[in-house]
Image (cartoon, rainbow, N blue to C red):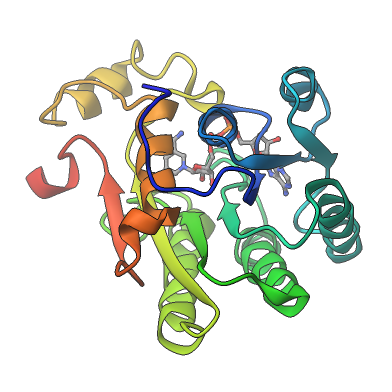
Length: 242
Ligand SMILES: NC(=O)c1ccc[n+]([C@@H]2O[C@H](COP(=O)([O-])OP(=O)(O)OC[C@H]3O[C@@H](n4cnc5c(N)ncnc54)[C@H](O)[C@@H]3O)[C@@H](O)[C@H]2O)c1
């Protein structure tokens, strides 16, 4: 499917956070194959080595750390030859991690707002677009983790702010993955809870990282030029059956 033309201008820049694994990695690889200049950022260097080996610019960066974010954006501008046209705010902690509520919101929501603001301040090019990886959690269903549901709803609130008040600079949209087969959910499909939940998903399986990457790239692309402020669930129909 690498020859699918989403209308991107080859050489345009894109930053993908959390690119070392899962959904972010799939977006980085698909964007690279689509001819975009990709900068993949991650907290952990190990997942980035493989991307760097394929000619993708990488930055080790904790997106919750404001100075680290600024440094990574500066390095990305140097490497890509200007402010990237596209931003994928994908990084975020797993709902399984026990976190203090306020700290979790700072990490999950503050990082999305902070990086987006840095990028806007840098002077986004015409036709710029941002997609955030939210979740059906918080936007369609509630999770056991209080901070996860609250944070995923909050990032969509921020997307709606951007869509309404920053449309002179960017389009902003969000996706809501359902159960997605990434390392953080390793073994889920085989577990008792996995059988229970996936049994109620009309498509009867988890989504793949690629099945999240394509809609993200579509929402960024010029083909989606009139799509602004939407939340797109990608969950195999799970939430419409609830
Ligand atoms: N897997 C799912 O079922 C699912 C469902 C709904 C939403 N999501 C969301 O999708 C996004 C990606 O998750 P995934 O499933 O691909 O997970 P993953 O664990 O496979 O990958 C996440 C990557 O983000 C990086 N990361 C985490 N915090 C970071 C930070 N502060 N700065 C920089 N990098 C950081 C990790 O090191 C990791 O490489 C997350 O926002 C997650 O909440 C996932």
